[in-house]
Length: 88
Image 1: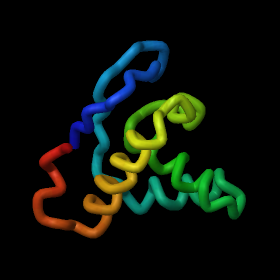
Image 2 (image 1 turned 45 degrees about the horizontal axis):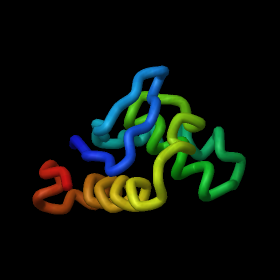
Image 3 (image 1 turned 180 degrees about the vertical axis):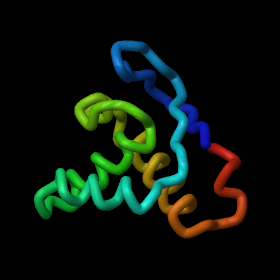
Image 4 (image 1 turned 120 degrees about the vertical axis):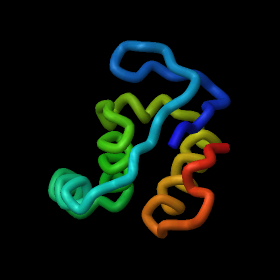
């Protein structure tokens, strides 16, 4: 799922104005939980980074409004909501 960013950021050393969020797997969840050491915010960041294909630190540059859009689309993917593939 492609997500258009209001504010471009650097991902893996490249300035981007959109990101692609792939569907999460059980393996993504297990790895993200293990790396988060019980920190829910870090778990979510680890999940998003895994789904985007970047380091969690890259996502620190996201504006809060872009992050909230990413959260919305992530939960649509996880819940299997209709229309989840149409990005905002």
